[in-house]
Amino acid sequence: MSAKNGSAVKRSRLIGCAVAAMFALSALFAAGANAVLPPVSQTYLALGDSLAFGYSSELFNTNLPLGEPAAAFEHGYVNNYYTHLKPRGNGVQLQNLGCPGETTDSLIGNGPLGSAVDPGTGEAPCAYHNVTAEKLGFPAGFKFPLHNEYGGSKSQLERALELLAVDALSGKPVTTLSLNIGANDQLHAVAKCEAQAKAEVEVIVGKRIEQKIGEKLGKGEITPEEIPATVAKLSAEEAANPANKKLGEKLGNECVAKAATALGEYIGTRIGTILYVLRKGAEFGSINYTGKVIFVGAYNPYGNLYAFPTRKEQTEGVIDEVLPGSNFLVSQFNQGFKGVVETFGGCFADTKPKFNPQNSLEPARLQKYTNMANTGITNGQKDGPDIHPTPTGYKIMNNVMVVACG
Image (cartoon, rainbow, N blue to C red; front, side, top):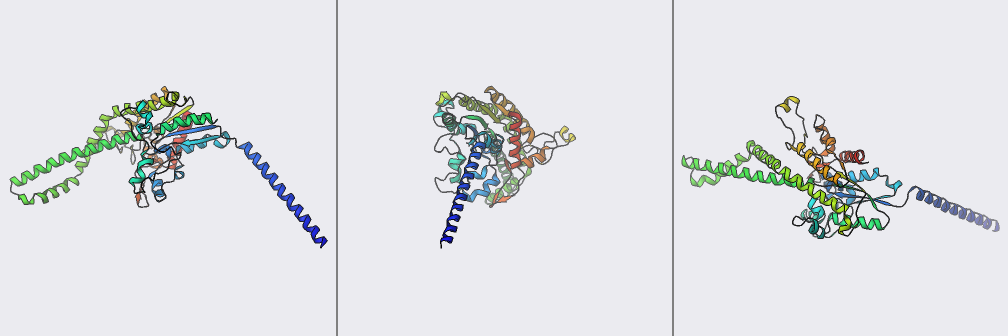
C-alpha cells in the first residue's frame, strides 16, 4: 500500500508541476500577445451611405429572413481600408456610422444640429435604420441594425461629433476619417426626373387617345357604348409602343441635364457644411477635428455597361451609357466636390476612373466591379441591377483611397 501511495504522490506532484508549467506558458503567450497587440490608441471613423455600410442587394436578399445583421455587411471599402491601417499592430479601432440610403441632408439630420446649420432643408436621419424594416413587413419598432448604433432621432453627423469628443477624452482620438455622400441625392434627382417624364408622356398619350376616340366617333367607326373598350385597346397599344418609352427617356435625360448644375451646387454646399462642422466641432459642443479626412468620390454605375461604341459610332453620336451623358455629369460633380474637400484640408479619392475609364474596358469593369449586370434571384428577390459594388469593386475603392490618400 505504501508503495502505491508513494506512486500516487509522485503522479500528483508531476501533474501539479505540469499544470504549473502550463499556466506559466500561458502567461508567457499572453505577455507575448500583449507585446504584439498594443491597446487601442486611435480610431478610424467612417461616415457615409450604403457604400460605407458595405451594402449590396444580393447580401440584403441573402440575409432578409435574418433581419439583416450588420456583421453580414463587413466586406465594404471601409473594412478594407481598416485592414490597410494595420489595426492589430497600430492599435486602431473602427467606428463605422454608415447608413444605406443616406443623403447629404439626412446625414446632417433635422435635429438641433440640422436646425443650426441646415435650416429649412433638414431630413430625418438614416431611413434604413428607422423606417425600412417596417415597410418590408417586419414588426413595428424593429430596426435594421447599423455597425455602430446611435439610435433615436440623432443624425450621423451628430453622433460623429459625440465620438470625436469621447474618443479624444478616452485616449483613443480619431486620427482618420472617411466620408462618402451625395450619390443618393443624385439618385433622388434622377427618380424625380423619371417620374416627371412619365407623367408628361402620359399626358401626351392621353391627348392622343382622346383625339383618336373623337375621330372614330366622328367617322361612325364606334358608338358611345364602345368608348371604354376602345380606350382600353388604344391604351394597350400605346403602352407597347417603343416610341413612348423612347420619348420618356428623352424627356427624363433632358430633365436631368437641366437640373445637374443646381444639383451639383446643392450637394457641394452640403458637403462643405458637413466638413465645416467636423473641422469646427468646438462650435457645436465637440472638438475641432484636425486629422486626416478622405472623401471617397462616386463612380458611375450608369455608364457603358454592356458595350462601348466604336470610334465610328462615337463620331456618329452613338451613346451606349445606361443613362446618356452620365459619365460627363459624374466627372463634373467630382471635380467640383474635390475643390470643396480640399478647401477643408481633405483628400479626394476619385474612384470613377477605375470604374469608368471611358474606353473599351468600361463594360467589363462595370460588370466586374458593380452588381449592375447581376441577374441572380435570392430568396425570391432580384439581386440586380444594383448600383452597389461587388466585393471586388469595394476592394478597388480601397485601393484608390490608399494610392490617393495613403
